[in-house]
Length: 233
Image (tube, rainbow, N blue to C red; front, top):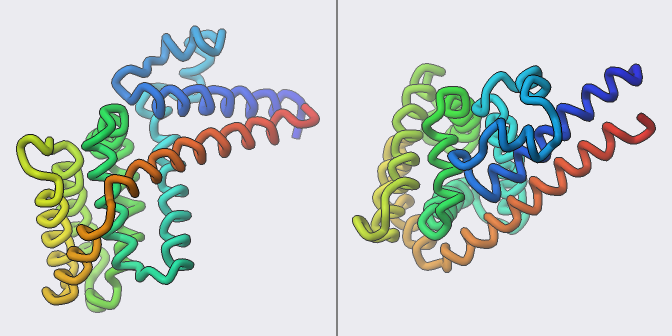
């Protein structure tokens, strides 16, 4: 790789690192390209050369969220949790995170409402649900998986944006999980057992731990990427 290409790669990763830090600490709404330009001491044109809009830049962080979620799912499997229970815990933790942390709520709500990132959420989650619910939907077509994910992503968005003052969090979690698992044909008895198990856990503490680990993961990944890109440059 030429010195120029190394420099360009490092510049792009420098932008991603600073933007990720801002999105995680301040949320999507309070992050702006002009503020990032000032923080990086870099022209706005240099940023938009790599990322035409804030949404394009935010999408890079959402991709890192998917990688983190895959790691959490793998850890759950190593701990002996079924993929179905791990799926339920993921949504439960996300709901708890968004109830307690306004920045996290803004982050997740933006991911589920912006066109570019919502498309990525649906694409990523369609593949995830095939792995989790494939045995319940063995005869489904690709179209059925896609249509179901459109419905499920709407339920998830409603769950993370509903306030506990309007609907108690345990009720939000129960109704969301029961509806989603019903869409994928999970038998009622199995649905009940997984939901009861999730609600019996300290899911608020779980949400706080996952949020902390996500922030640590983002910082480490982007720092390592930038260090590797600039090494020997």
